[in-house]
Image (cartoon, rainbow, N blue to C red; front, side, top):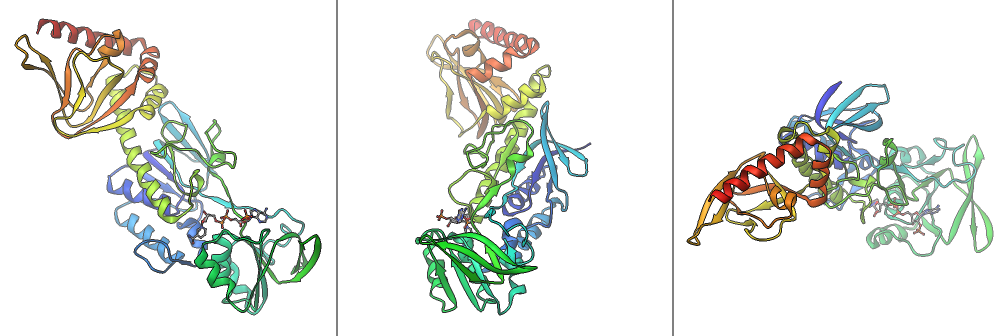
Length: 438
Ligand code: NAP
């Protein structure tokens, strides 16, 4: 089984961004894509809301993103559909459709989704013979034809605009009188002479003989037949990320993966970004931002996991992974206070980067240095083990990154391995003795 630190699943803007950052951080990473890289933007003609590019085609932007990630050494594997992701100890096993298994400490899921279907008679039968979910892919087959786009969102309008290059007449069929597409897109499309809105109208059937010839819509309680040769359906999107998991992963009622602000899903070591994640806006800008957060956190998660495993080698691997995923990453500037002597303790800390210094008040009131902590060292255990006040003050000596465990997470770490608990108690006893000698 090939082992990686990080596996990115999906090659759209979110995946390529995660890949770029992973490659620049020198992580052992691979990006798996079931088709060609680009994702949803390959189905988009013009992108006009990605900062820095007033207007760029989806194909060009995705190529630029892929080239950028490749330049920094990202390993991209196309035509590698993923069947399943499962957890084994501290690793995620990614199973491909062809049965190959890969493993990694962390996985970022950026698989987007697939178009929602109308679910009316004729839709399936005429798919590929007049029914399409991608104007950029299929529009050119319909030069001089009468066409219909179904839907009232950004996709319907953006794709509708593209179709006006080929259509003799374009109907915009939408179930309400109000459209949810951005105003600028509405203005552009609905003011074109060849465009006619049919609202509020519900598509009941798609028909033809061999190829699409008409759609039947219901408007004001009456059924009408509209002659068209192509029907382009843009009525939303079904996220597919959650179907990759055998174990439970938290998702909302529409199937979008739920994450926290670091893009962590409910499974330790699994992150989600882009259109498959529950969020307000499905935009390229948000996808790349979220993917950046995900990969930066994943990098820290992997470091934390390795530190926990180094410090507590007897801990069950899945508990180490759970602990690392629950840890809060906290950053301190030199001199910042982390723990104050005499206060109650509610957190356990482990240093990821930088150095911290422990001091105690001497009999004359001056601070005496009693310890230094570097990467992999921990402190704060005495307060949690014995519910005693902090026996020392700890401050950052350098820029410092620590992972902080709350009482419950620390308790689980102790409860799952006698060896871990014995080791932490031994360190705590030694420190308490040392402190009393001061
Ligand atoms: P969307 O915003 O969810 O719009 C779906 C449209 O389909 C809505 O108008 C909805 O009607 C209609 N609809 C839903 N179910 C239907 C059904 N069963 N029968 C008939 N009509 C139905 O989806 P989208 O347009 O694919 O956009 C998805 C996301 O991508 C959005 O966040 C959008 O902003 C973003 N996007 C952005 C751009 C851009 O240029 N920035 C381009 C494309 C997409 P109701 O309005 O009545 O609910």
